[in-house]
Length: 372
Image (cartoon, rainbow, N blue to C red; front, side):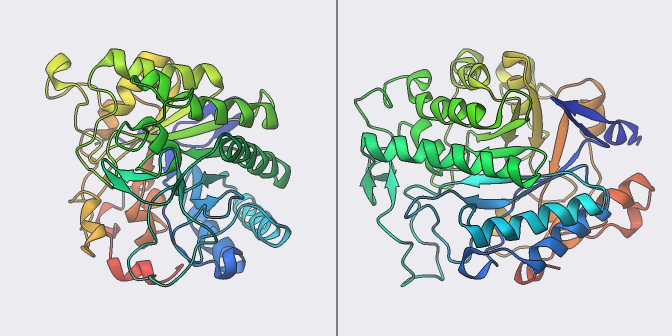
């Protein structure tokens, strides 16, 4: 195995990363009152010291009354929270790293198990007041709600640039608000933000992207995370063909997205095996081919089981990188995001680079209890 490709620089807009390894956003829910502080700064700094090229923070919510479904998820608004995030960015930069916040709105997803009785600040809002096909929850967003939400994403992105972050990511995946507009199971609107086709249902995301691009200017990198699967339905597919994927993603790149962060269950699985076979392009590979945008792939990297096991409290042993290097050598995608393994092993990237594979740690569920 050669890992040379993992440790070659990559440039997007004016941002040059020292390597191709990205820390994937992972919800930690450890910011009391929504305010990040020294614990978060130290947590992310350790991953920068461990050699991660780009850190994407846990989901951090925009200024809407019910933008989060778990207490202690950090805000990305308000003087105190933004001061905390400035401390985080400074800590990562002090360790020689790069970092961007993931901007989030959980939409109609109910309050998470274990937090019943906690009130998020208002009724859950979503395109049609649905959390899944035929499953009402919360309220349908008005035109004013939509406009205010678009403005909230733009303001958060503007603040991220002002605070010195290197990039910003919009969370448009996994069944949360932006993704709820994409999915016909949660978007039954009959106005301009709904429609029978994925291109029509992508309008909300495109409007968010355009507003964010206007707020951050033309030269600041913008990432959008997308997925086929939803937490409401792991088998859901927004695009069943390359043409549908083009209709979905190309308008978002045209609106201003620089990098598509393509989340799938296992990064090595082909997206359309009926077209290019069992060793064909994965989700990120097809997204890059069809749109021309840079892509990040993600999905169970460096572990011996996929990430759904973590939802059940299961651990996962460290594993070889499999086809990762070969896929990156042929430029199938540009960057690789690493998730759970970086919770348990802040030095994972350094160990890979130094060939210390015997020292790699797997994912230990107990590590979710602390910001270590």
